[in-house]
Image 1: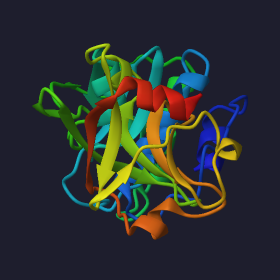
Image 2: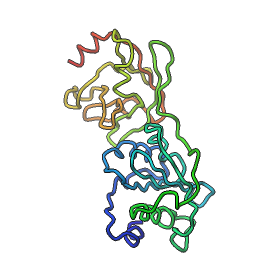
Image 3: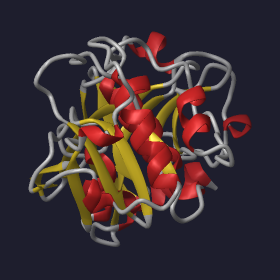
Image 4: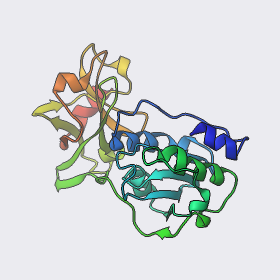
Length: 253
């Protein structure tokens, strides 16, 4: 892919975000993109190719969103970014004039996506690549569900290699309810009522909540895997339940 991009645009500056996404793991790729796209400059072109449907009738798309571009398969990779930003436009990559020849049935990253990435970096208009797409494949929404006045329900959207369990709750979910209450977390019948500012603030092997670098509340353990200690897997439901604010404030300090 890099060779194809540099053959079309020798001045391209290529930055690797990650090559450690588990095979076929669309959700993990979507989370990694969501976590870092805001750190890149305007008009960055992101190539994301986690593509278990390669060679099938799944679409290839290019999206303009948040002042940047995203190119890859239409399988949900970009849906969380579009959900967050709300304002986006997409095209179906059908203009074969931009394809590398011959097109492999198993390596569209090299033969389809990389050429479009390179031409975008050279200033080619998105409209030249194909017809507009009115909708895209979407992963489950990042928005938690309100169960009642005291409980909102989310899920684990990512578990990193350290065993930190990233929820789809943000720091705002702790402050957006009535000012007389805050929240504690419940997962696998385990109540987590420690909220820390950083890892070293916790006791060894303590399970606690922390606002992670991606802006989501994470369930973590100091020098241990919270996922292993709790028996948690991605996709599991988790609840934030109202608790006395003074009690939480005392624990946070």
